[in-house]
Length: 359
Image (cartoon, rainbow, N blue to C red; front, side, top):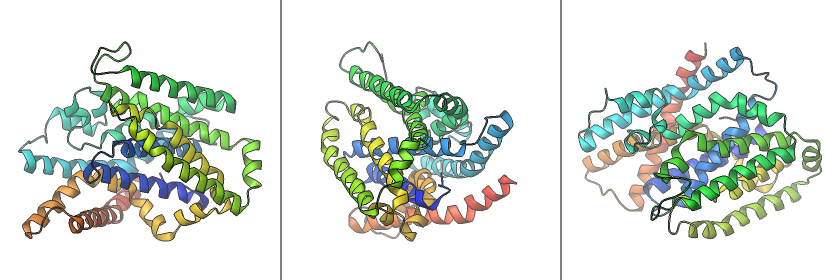
């Protein structure tokens, strides 16, 4: 989602960096599961924050929410279908699977694939499409979530988020594949990661953060910040997140999904710090508002959804040229190619279709 005010650009840039980190964790950074889970959680928090911001003056009428959902469909669905078609083509050439008229494809088209517990559905044709499906579920129920949180005091919102975090931590550490769990009997990967309702944790966190920023104390404190103080807060937060990373990475042992249940404090700290300081011109905020980064932040959704199909096509082209499909040169070529494809799709397909559908 694109922020409406320039001083929120650092958040959009950070989301783009998170998307790039997810792509690299999928294809190049072996064992970077904690990085992937951290960045995925940030994207859900980010979406919750800006969804609450978009509904700030809304009274949640059915007609208004319908327009909101249609706007989101116009923005994301054509890209989603294009990425699905590219992934169908790649799946056919990779393994000979013709899934065009399958139930799996139908579930993807209806944005229902992560509601099935079978990996062939929630990972399915485009392994990253579950994120968009989860996001649309959260968009759909956002009036209920925002309306409920709006009537709570800031400390009550923080308590709700804390309870959700504790509950998920308990579930994550109780779900042990080596022994039956009292809380989760099977498939902890799915129920702690892809299952749409479980992602309400991050989405609600973003909603709560937005409502907290509306408080008079928050605004007064942010208004008193100097650029130097904003820089110090940003640098300390970045340093703390880097220092925490090895600790979180160790939580991967013996089961990776425990790391996912432990990323919430890091995500909240980073998101909260940037929201708090972005209007005061801190060093990190200024760096992340650099125009080239701002331009790249507009193609985050394209990079994320097209990664599987685009990487396959790039790999085939490199092989046809007789070039090696490994090493630094191939990494630069593949990553640069993905960015170019995403940029072309954004400007030549997504934006024109969005304007057409928005009418």
